[in-house]
Length: 385
Image 1 (cartoon, helix red, strand yellow):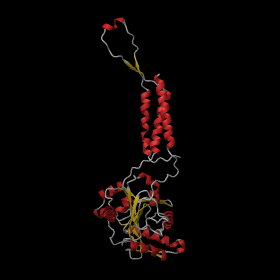
Image 2 (cartoon, rainbow, N blue to C red):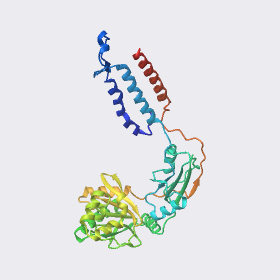
Image 3 (cartoon, one colour):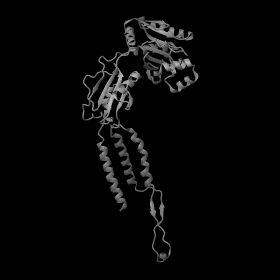
């Protein structure tokens, strides 16, 4: 199967209307005969009639096939077009990111989000960059696993990783503590009308899994808190609150941030305190959506911890509660790569770009285009004689 790296070329298919329009026209001169008395009449240019009918159908088909082949060849031909580029981890500290970009001299470079498995993605798509382009990869420590062998690139690649920030250290410690202790500490911030629902949920959590883990609820987080449940409207969480994970109820104004439409509604109808709470969690505007165990969750990382929000917070029935418990067990924090890639620079080590996997050469399209062009010229010449 041919791999099309530039599928936008297929938007040029409407050009097929040009030969069709041209072949629907036929200009024919009125047959004129000279008369002996015509020399006494004023001269006039010969008239033309335009008759709309199909002419030279075979030639029309050949020309249309030639245009389709040309578009297919352009869509299959890869031309390097990217310049200097910065690939940025969305969870990295924005201030640190700007500082590193300026220090590396990439202030005017194009910026792109960091893809999953960035080094392998670069090896696959490196042919999109011009030969003189340079790349800068900025990510948090532990986000890029060190490959078993030194990667070979055709462009200079600089990797700058952010060392674990001070606010991330206690979060990592809390995650480790959660796996060692049978007791999970949860801080619950909710109005009296919703506290009962949350307490019932975690009481049900206590009874599953052979009651191997106890969920202890508190009103404020401490050093042992691994989860904060935020279900308080028109209030801003204290800036000192930290936890590995946050559950933000859909009724809370914070949960409305992922949708731009909802954010406009909240900012137009909520109180100043609600708008301040939205400003405290700007990461939710770029939250990712995850569907697991029949539940739709949105999540994003922040200096406070990982933020989760869903319409099922808190569950309304036993089936939803069980589905949430099972999903939460599946979403247990995965460890960081054993060997993370440190900050370093990979110089250009290859003179040729790797072949695209599962892609056949487009040379046959070029030969087909040449053959159709020759046939078109022969038919056009034969039509005139």
